[in-house]
Image 1 (cartoon, rainbow over the protein chains, first blue to last red):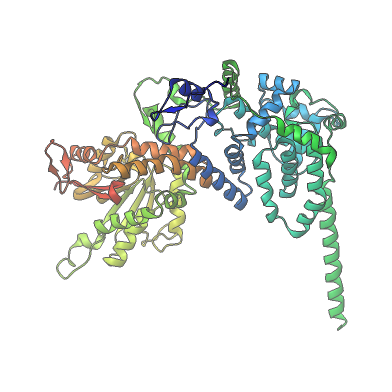
Image 2: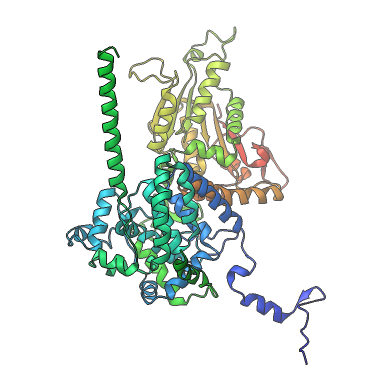
Length: 296
Length: 338
């Protein structure tokens, strides 16, 4: 005999049981209970709880702002935070929890700043180590680990840490793939990160391809995008690498373990092309001058 | 690509089922944030000698620190100040400032009856407080020169913050009021870095018109600033203040206005100026400012005569100010008795 289920709504009021069931739903599914003027207390230092409208506006504003001015990395950061919920950052956290190293990272919650990563020590490591490659990349590109903004707009503290960890290890991804900080290199790394972490901001930032010159765009679609997608998908989750422990590992060994191939050196390609262009221009100038002198 | 699919789908299969975070993990992230930050602990946690505190937005800070905190806020907003004003008020701040200056009518219009007076030949001396970027000063000089044909009136722009003054200098560099030669008799604008509560660089009874636009809510001791204003003004001189009000009288409009203030303005600050905190402070400081009636009372207490005031039924001051845009901003005036 089928059990007769009581209707949830009787006389326009929900029963006590339904009410308890509603409360037991995970937070994203419950109705949002705060407004701009009644924000809940922060869950961690620097936390700013945003309503859905604010988050949407932040996402739109950050997207257009960072497209107009790609040097505003704080906008790319806030775009990431505004678009990471409801599904993607939770998925990334679950991916960390599914991996033993990821679980250790979530337990220890290490942070990467210029305090915790001593560049002097890294520089004197042997040449083929991850730490040396990281220090060399930082020096080559002229950046420091302190340029990363704090996560503010993600409500759950552990998910906020996952986002912060992703942000702080972004430079390591650059270091082991050798891609530079110019827009071309950043787009290649973002494409790789999208295939690897599925964060929406990484995919959205690929819109910046419109800012590339034609030759750069061609290079991107022919070489770097296929590299990024295939490597991002087949590699292990880069967010699960405990970088603080891998500083003295050989880079090749780490790359083999993760399943990442090195893409063609972008700075070299550009330098070769630039030198070739300069040589061509010089030759053309010389020919013109010669031609003018001879009355041709 | 087919070989890559299993891993990709494995990634997608990880679906979040619960947002539960145990208390220890929650606590440890909070401490990892603190560890990651290399900032000093908030000044409000320090106990100073005097232990006197005041509000800094919704925060409570020691009185000694408020001025430097305000200075920091304005150093960071100085570069984008005018753009941000346009975005926050949707351009309406220009109308407010134009009306403010027009209603003051600076400059002496020489007519057949007053041409001979030596006072008028020297022009008015106007002091624009917290006038860093020079919005009001430029309008004052333009009005005096163009409408009253007074080329002698001069303005002293004073601000506590050197970056804001630098923006003001930039604005005036292209105008004909400020020439870069040191000994120019035509200089009609000068810059003074000072705290409005201590204008000892200015003599008593020397200023014809004292203006402060959108500055006084940042002062630590507003009554002290009002007393300094009283001191430097000549008898018969005018004190004029344009400032935001803490709430609108219409509750529905107030609801909309507050949601714009606390929601949109810090967001615009984040997107345009990369600085949510400063704009959060600005909207909180508006909230903390006394109401129009209270502020008019403070002006009277400093010794000014407040024009147009009446005592209402509840003994409160009424009519001693002018509301702008449904009460979002208000102009307060006071006259130093002769």
